[in-house]
Image 1: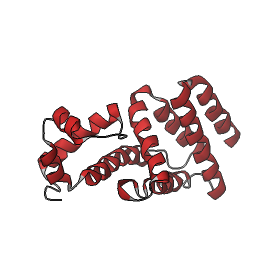
Image 2: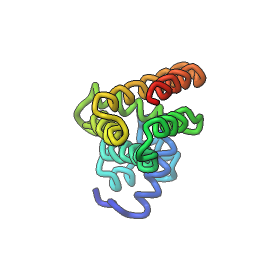
Image 3: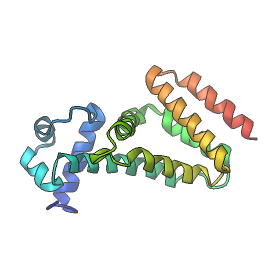
Length: 175
């Protein structure tokens, strides 16, 4: 990758990230993306090394948004942590990011090679590390399964009240 760390690369990464939040990664084509971000396919390939390199960079950018949430969570109160996480997950402003996350997660399960490699496993490890600070081993896995299930349900149905009620009932049992 010739342009790693360059301001132009970072500028185009942010613009491409905004594009994939709206359009997803499935069927990503360099021509429409380049046109949208004010560049050319050749420049994108130069800066990211390949289309796979661009996809890896975009997944990394999405993961950094996820990690930013994880860094700011309550440290010693499981109920507060889970409520904070659910409020963030349920916020309409995060729907595009979460759909992108689901796409990357799913693709990494069915296409374990290439730019998707390890995405799902890394995100599981990230979340279990955070949840494990306030919940013992199996309880952290249970909480992660509940949050992911509620998130998928919310994205599929838009029913934040019902999915949120399930999360709230789980949190209430923690007390």
